[in-house]
Length: 160
Image 1 (cartoon, rainbow, N blue to C red):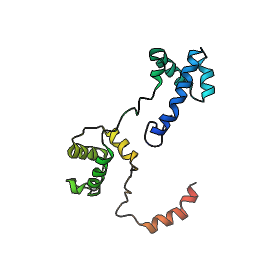
Image 2: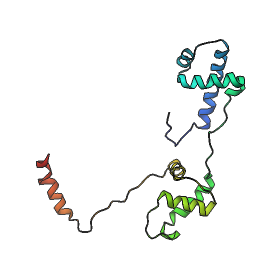
Image 3: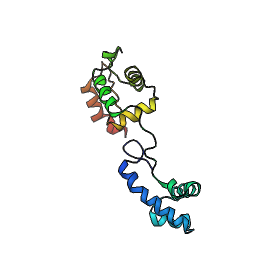
Image 4: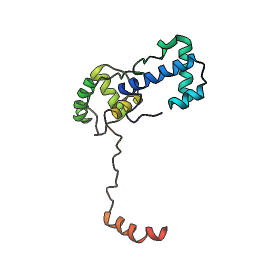
């Protein structure tokens, strides 16, 4: 399952799912089949199989929530500082043009916080905090908007 917030379950959802795992554990003890448990608890069979394996290895304690899978390297407080730096623009940090790239944001994070992270991690960080990918509109300097409008009106319908 993919999550809109950029990955993983929220703390609330982890608390909600933990009793479901414990119910599954009780049913493992009674010898119930994986498919039946998955259907009754409305989870995937693969989840039940993982839980069964954990239960066999460590009992009911192994079904407890272990918290988030991975904490982000950049904290929310650090991200607030990062946003202030991003607001200065790339030129304010020595780059010639006004485009923030993942590589540039990554370099800024390394310089500001001494944290080395991948471009994918930078993308997840930005996405998690509501930033989106932007592409500058590139238009030819010689572009004649009136001629383009006429072409769209007269020529384009005939081409279809």
